[in-house]
Every structure is written in structure tokens, then in C-alpha cells.
Amino acid sequence: MDSTTNIQELKEKIKKFCDDRDWDQFHNAKELAIAMNIESSELLEHFRWKKDKEVDEMFKDKEKRQKIEDEMADVFYFLLRMSDRYNIDLSKALETKMKENSAKYPVKKFKGSAKKYNEI
Amino acid sequence: MDSTTNIQELKEKIKKFCDDRDWDQFHNAKELAIAMNIESSELLEHFRWKKDKEVDEMFKDKEKRQKIEDEMADVFYFLLRMSDRYNIDLSKALETKMKENSAKYPVKKFKGSAKKYNEI
Amino acid sequence: MDSTTNIQELKEKIKKFCDDRDWDQFHNAKELAIAMNIESSELLEHFRWKKDKEVDEMFKDKEKRQKIEDEMADVFYFLLRMSDRYNIDLSKALETKMKENSAKYPVKKFKGSAKKYNEI
Amino acid sequence: MDSTTNIQELKEKIKKFCDDRDWDQFHNAKELAIAMNIESSELLEHFRWKKDKEVDEMFKDKEKRQKIEDEMADVFYFLLRMSDRYNIDLSKALETKMKENSAKYPVKKFKGSAKKYNEI
Image (tube, rainbow over all chains, first blue to last red; front, side, top):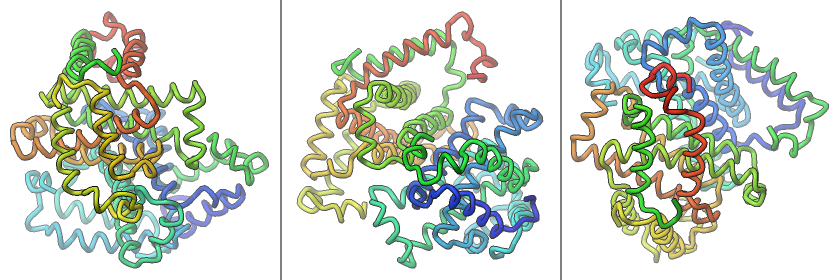
């Protein structure tokens, strides 16, 4: 598994992992959304009270970086699990959303504009 | 972009989208983690006050399904953006985490055990 | 401090606690909102994967109940801290919001109506 | 209702509001914790992408200030509702937690120490 692995393969690996443990019974959309919330809060917790500069420093520390990657993996795991359970094509969903965002945030208007971004 | 698109391609598409708008200045890890929290709460909000059966019904309604997919795409977008900004290989991070979880939740002990899962 | 203690007294106790440690420098609204998010996710984590019946059982277990109360106290602490730092009268804010909600959810329409509540 | 109103009175007002609408059926601890998460994310959303200085400016704008107060009221509402439903004395819970924190973060060690606070 690396950056050339496609989404379908990742979903299947997770499905096998969960099937082996008979975990379908717990993994409905509401529980998976709860799990995503908890994991993304654990990710945010690493940056609590930190200034921007301190945040960037954390990624140079191997151990801290690993912990951050672990939390990101947890969010990803539940996101993929949900997309597998409900037959959602994450890449297509992302493409649809990005098309909408391209129209909503035209380059001409938003380029380099901190002020406008702040109003999003 | 579909389920055979790999993670690297998705990251590059998002990078281009953000570069075109000069958004690097806003996208440090802390802000991206905040964004992931907000988007995963918006996802959860769709299921608020709903019983399991009602949750599953939502996915049969085309419009509701689309809204849920949109929120999932938002979480995915910020997760990919963070992994691109900090050179994190999400698939490898996921693989590492799943190896840990395989050891932590052995099939023999967890298979079909609601009780044990609840103690996680 | 008990249920007859008023909000003002609670805010002042927290203010003294933070002043003693010179913590104003960390407690701007954004950081406090981040903290509230993290603590309310820790609260939710106690109920993850649990069915309604199991959730209610938890409150009969003294130790589990204490842990839940601790997380609620953490949310309350940051909420009071924010209201003190920005001169917000939480009771008045609550009263204002409840008046709006009284108009938004009239008794006649909502009483006993699970269906309508679900559409909120 | 103002800053001299005590917690017990606030809980009773909310109880009456919910009893009038027969909402006990929705308000178990898990749903209330979900609601707290969603509302505290809506609070955080107001500060998304904002620098510290911009955050403080928001409180000078009457309309923005009102929106922030509304979100804080929402978090407070669900926190009070949960404490009423499960007979939790929020002030006592807060007192217990602050005693623990006084021991955990002694004044001598933490006063004025940004570095130490960051390690919390």
C-alpha cells in the first residue's frame, strides 16, 4: 500500500479486516460518522494551544509526526469504511464537490485574497 | 476520477486547485485539522436524532444521499490536502495503523463479539 | 459549589485559577472553541458503539459515571472561560436562544411528534 | 435569567421546555453528546481561517457577536439538558475537576510558562 494504491483496493483491505471480525453490525453510517468526529478531534488535539510555527516544527520530530499520521489514518479508515458500506465512490464525490467549488471560488476573485478566503 | 484513481493523483488535483488560488497561506496543519472537525460534524449532523433504521433509509433518497456524499468529500479533501502539504503517504499510514490494529484486535478474540467490541 | 451556585461565581473561580497561572495568553476564543470541541468529543467517545440501553447502564456504574461527569465539567470549564474572557452573559444568551426556539418549535406542532423532531 | 441565575433554575427552564414538547424520547446521553459536538463545531466554524487578531475583532461587531453567543447558548443548553436528565450537579463536577487540575498544574510550575502549557 502506497500512494499508487487506488481507493478500491484500500476499501477492500478494510472490508476484509472488518469481515474477519464480524464488525458490520457496528458499522452503520451514524456510528462511523461519530468515529470520524472522535478521530479528527484526536488529530486536532495534537495542535491545541500551538502557534503556527510550533505546529510546523512538530512534523520534523519523527515521533510526533508518527502520532499525527496515526490519527490521520484513523480518519481515513472510517471514511473508507463508510464509503464501502454505502457504495459511495469517494473519488467521484470529491470530483463533484471540487467542480462546485471551482464555480463557487473562481480563481480571478480568490487568488491571493486572504480577506475573501476569510469570508468563506 | 473514480475508484481506480490513486491517492497521488487526487492530491495533485487538490494541490493545483489550491495553488491556482494561492491558498497555501491558510492551509497549515492546525487549520486543516479544524476544517476536518467541522466537516465531519456536518456529516454527523445529517444523522442527528435518527435511529439506525432511519439512517439506512436516508441512503435510498437520492437527494439526501448526495448531501451525505458531499460532506464525506469535504472531509476527504482536507485529509488529502494535509497529507500533500506535509508529505504524508496516507496509504502507508493506513497500512501501518491496520497492522497495529490486527495485533490489538486478534480475529480469534473479537470475531462476532459485540461485548468485546464495546470495550474498545 | 453546587446547583445553587450562580454562573457569575463559577466564572470568577475559573478566572482566578487561570490568572494564578497567567493563562490569558492562551485563552483566545478560537483556542477555547477548539478545546470545547476536543472535550465534547471525549465525552462522546464514552458512548461510541453503544446502544441506548448500554448508554443508560453506564450511569449506574459509579466509576464510569465519574468519567462522564469529568468530561462534562471540561466542556463547562471552557464554556465559562470563554464567556468570562469576552463578557458574555451565558444565562441571557440561553434565554435569547430559548425564546427563538419557542417560536421555531411551537408546542402544538411538535408535542410528541418524533417525525417532526427528526426533521429539525 | 442573568449571571445571578443559578444552574438549578436554568435546568428547570430547559426541562419545562422539553417536557412541553415531549422530547425526553430523543434526549439520551449519546444523542445529547452528539448535539454538543455539532454545536461546538458550529461555534468553531466562526473562527475558521481567522488569525488571533481577526478573532478578537469579531466580538466588536454586534451581529457577529450575537451569532457566537447563540452557538455558545446551544452548547450550554445541551450540557444543562444532559445534567438534568442524568442528575448530574455540574457545579460539583466542575469543582471536582478543578481540584484535580490544581494538583496537576501547580501555580509554581506553570505560572507564565508558555512552554509548559504547550505540553499539556
